Image (cartoon, rainbow, N blue to C red; front, side, top):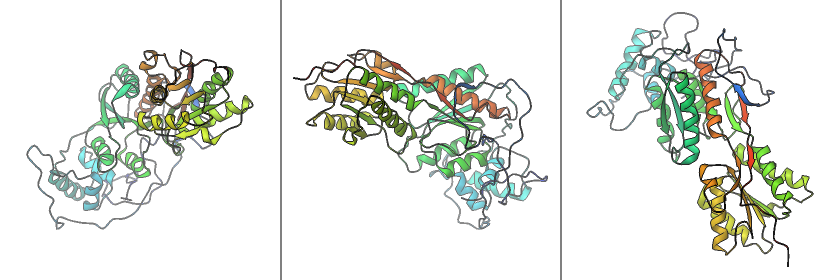
Length: 424
């Protein structure tokens, strides 16, 4: 819906009507401009105190909805235990009540700045759909206690584990607990339920490892007043939204330069989805290293997958069956590198005698496979820790030292890369 940005800044109780106000809801992270350059790791340390800087105003999304009352068709009653049979989103409740999502959140958490009639109308709809109202303290100071949400597409595997460990350690040191949510990003209702879940519990902030966060989801987070930071977003967020990534271009450049330094001249790359910032940066780094070595960029040696096993396996088979096959493959993830191992074995090729392979991430298994994988280390725990410290700054009412941080990646040379075999 369009009536976000409801904030009674000028006194009096919130009557729930959406207005076009020049307002930046809490948690937007404001202050950065498009000219700001990404900071390196170390920016975003937990705040030491001091007053929060003022922020420039930003137009909130505005609009109107048709006010509705209790003459609307009644929703199906909730099942035992207060859980509705078919989950209704807060956006739908806001639409039925003729108010903003922000107003619904205020009622849900017992805020006092809502007009009595509006509160009663929203409360009836919340109860009808099984949402219990619970008081929630406003996160205006970094006092110990409370919860911060960490939201990921998937919580399985070493990649997620590395991120969770960094977030948990940082929150524990600040006296906060962690709630973990997996979005299972297959689309459908699950893409919205995680956001509604944040709104129904007393979260103080959120670390979002959700690459495909939509504009509506950004707007809803701001309307709900939830401070948040992003990890490895698919696209560069709008100015002012805090985010953390890896140094993808330098990492890919180092990996490819390592292979050219070994004497390889036919080097393929298997990357992730081309719409992802990380994917494009890694291919750009690869291409720049080829140019530095005086090698022509060959589009026939470039493949885009999704950083997982099966597409990478198919791409690797395709590349290794070329008449003039590559002698080395730079994979955009360690999973893609393992799929390249498998494709090489399927075709009777040995790593590294017949094919050198370099990965990206340095997940724990990279040091246990045979041969041990040469890869680019992405410091996942540190990335999550930096993003979590950004959220702690915002909870304390302060701007992070930088809203754009790239944590340095490093090349780890092991056994999967070697000089190419002499021709003939």
